[in-house]
Image (cartoon, rainbow, N blue to C red; front, side):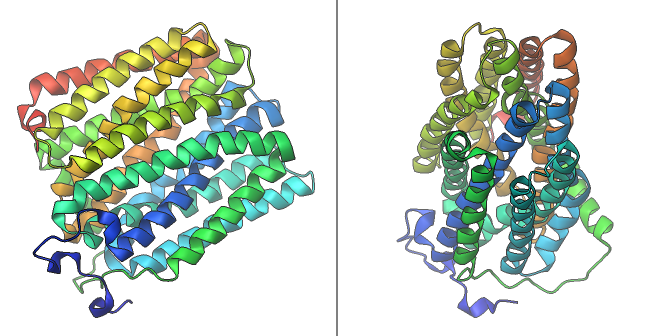
Length: 417
């Protein structure tokens, strides 16, 4: 376990010389590793859908199942991983999870090189990839408020969102370009290189010493986080909106839109990469705004209104009749999404005690990551029945109804700072 005396103590700087979370060395190392890790995670989710649809000749249902298998481990593991994030050294947990992720990507690359990768192997490897990512997810989020002073928390969350969106900007187009040049072997070789580079950054990361406390069973520890969330109306609503976004809007954009592009717009499903890149540019812009103006008032209402705008845009995306029309819609969606992503996570972390941060972040990722594959599975089936575009529009409409209800009915959330 890392000695706490050697860890950067950002809170010991009462004069506040650091104006940006990246000035904190250990947060900067975590941020760089997160950038690399999220690049590979986004690249893999996109590559799996592309591989199933075009490489293996699958349909919307098989694509949805592959994405479901990639994310379903989070539903069973991420809460226990959150407990571990509160119990063990964060750097160690990051190293082991990323090594496991690397092993899965290497195995995929080997099977591709041997021409032995079939749909069954894609499903199996997706499960193992999801397991590795589930163990590392909570600690990545939980370390943020532990490495930076409270006044820089929203700045740090916005920077983390910027890393996520930067990875989206780079990953999908680079996967498409690499795949066109070097086939799917090149796509997974690129992921191997990135993960190895990320492991190098982790070598110098120092994380705060975990405080000794009474250890209970994992399920008891997980339930304590759930009780904390259920007992706070603000957190209940924040998690409800997170769940709605994950199961409907996120699944529709990240998965079902690939099917719409292929089946309704008659283009290569891999062309969705360019739409995701445009959306990520929009997210990056608003993430920078939040990063620079993290002290803005009534953040709760702002992120609710951003979700309303995003829901309306998703309704329009589903009915778009051309690929060119989708480009501005995805950009505007990115502008709205940047506010939602940074403010939702920042508000959850600012209202959560640090001693249970890992467990609450485990619950956060369970909702954010674990529900999306469930949504993708259901939307894949629905798309085969009524069309991908109609499914996307329905998701936007349902999301709009829910967020409008919470905005009007819960002033405690609307007025959150």
